[in-house]
Amino acid sequence: MAERKEAERKAKEEAERKAKEEAERKAKEEAERKAKEEAERKAKEEAERKAKEEAERKAKEEAERKAKEEAERIAKEEAERIAKEEAERKAKEEAERKAKEEAERNSYKSMIEDFVSDIKECEYKDGIIFGKKKKIHYVANPITKRIWNAVVNKSSEADFDDNEFVPQKELGTFLESLNSYYSGKIVFEYLHKNIHALVHLQVYEKQDKNACFVYIKEEN
Image (cartoon, rainbow, N blue to C red; front, side, top):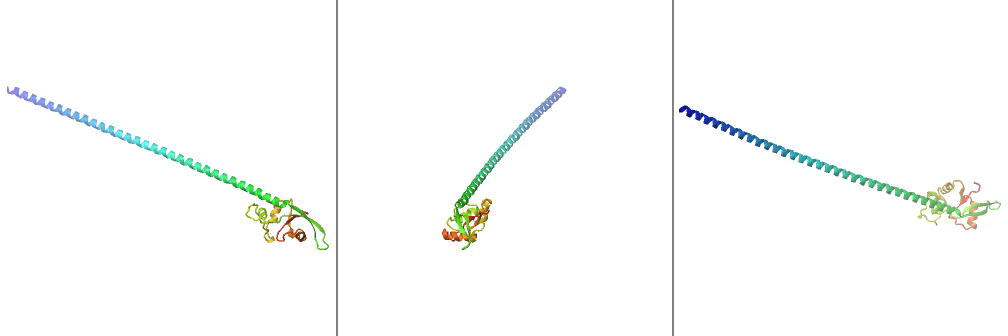
């Protein structure tokens, strides 16, 4: 009887031990499963977070790249526009300057040609009593400030008085410039260099004694 009870007790203890071990095993497996799931969930969340951050970073970089390219394109277009406008402005100014110079050149040339267009003939004696009769062709127009400016400065500026005579001492390079203009085809000389003809014209033609004139050197 005692042996039977002992056997039953031992069987009961063994069953309880096994049940306890089974429960512990299951609890351990459940804990491991939950820990694994939690780790996987966290890993998934971390991967998603990193993927999201990477996507946002790339999107930001792409947006910045496009913004930079757009800014550079706009800056380049603006620089090209400004350069084009500047080139057009300079070209226009240069064309206007050349046109003005051409008009000025043609204008001062016309003034010179108008100046020498009125040629008169004068017969005089090269001496008071026994002088020989000679002829000269002189420009009837006196040398005024304006024609002096046209010949010397190659300018037709209207600021110079067309009625103010240029004194002998202020003639400067007028004669050289006038002869250079005609390149030797016509050679002029100052009338005051031919005193006999000058006196004759002042006496008989009543020319202003303050005015200077030029005449054509026939021998040339």
